[in-house]
Image 1: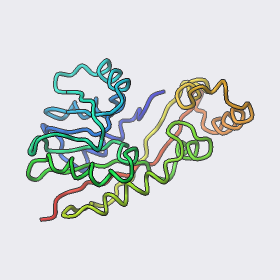
Image 2: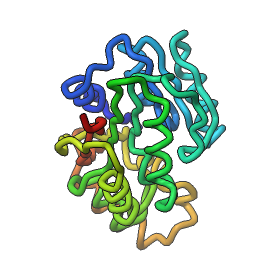
Image 3: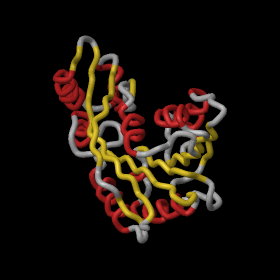
Image 4: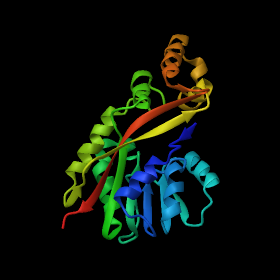
Amino acid sequence: MILDPTDQFITTILAHCDIRDKVILEVGCGKGRVTRDLARFARKVVATDPDEAALQQARAAITSENVEFVRCRGEALRFPPNSFDVAVYPLSLHHIPSEAMVASLAQAMGCLREGGCVIVIEPGEGGAMNEAKERFGVGSGDEREGKESALKAMAALQGWHMGETVRFRTLFSFADEEDFFHSMLPGYREKPQELLREIALFLGQYREGSEIVLDSERRMNVLTRHR
């Protein structure tokens, strides 16, 4: 599986926020797909995630000297004030327990320098990948409840302004049907054959040659302090 082969995440971030030569806190870096792109422009990236296995993969893939990986939960960001210029949540806020989302954002904001901002990228509504998650439970499954909680958390912050929603689309490219099942449905060989046939029929709509390409809507909001 290739995530975001056309680099829409970093393209959208750069179009709406100046991250060049900035010190960035990444909350929920996963395997480092967005980390790699942030590091191309930032002075330094501190990439956090609670999953040690994901961090190990990220460390193996990204050897840039300006990247530091730290294991911690998104609701336990223990960094001193004035440590960062920008905080980025790359599809991670909705994975934090809903009751801790506001606290996580407040912690991220508390370690920003004057004039700093928080970039929150969340799954949108449209796209074939979102449909597959909601219909078949592949990948991280149906995320609608978490997405709604994330929006409410951003809106609930005191003293911060949530900028306009920027919508964009990104792609997931799979070498073939087997690649999709291996990447998105662990243990799929044990799943009911009827489910696998239904998914295969769905994937057939999105073949491009031998590959399968699914799109997914994303939404980005930039949070800044009220002046």
